[in-house]
Image 1 (cartoon, rainbow, N blue to C red):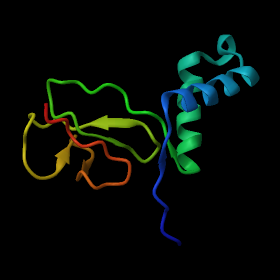
Image 2: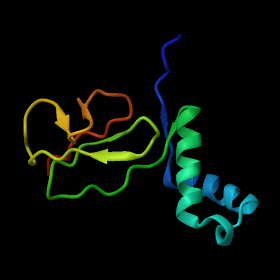
Image 3: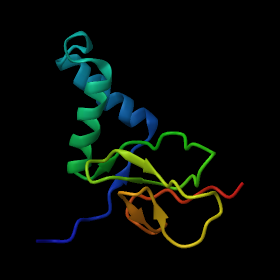
Image 4: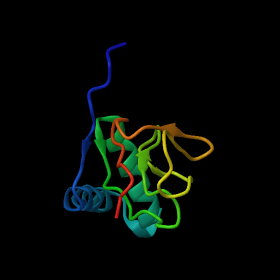
Length: 105
C-alpha cells in the first residue's frame, strides 16, 4: 500500500462551507447538525483533509492530533511535559501528521 500523503488542514470557512453543502442535501432536522458535522469530518479525513482543530482545554497539555477518523484528541498530560503526548488511547509526537503542538504561552 502506498504511503498516505500529508493531510491538508482546512480553514474554518472551508469546513463551514462543506458542512453547509451537506446540510443542503441532508436537512439538519432529519439528521441533526452535529451528526452532519461528524459525517463531513470523517468523509473529508478519508480523502486527505482535516477539520479545523477545536480550542484546546488549557488545564492539560494543549497538543492536539486527529484520530484515525479525523476527530481531534487532546493530550491529557500536564502542561509543559516532555516527550510524547498521551491520551491513554493515543500517543504521538509534535511531528505526527496533522498534529498541533502544545502552545507555550
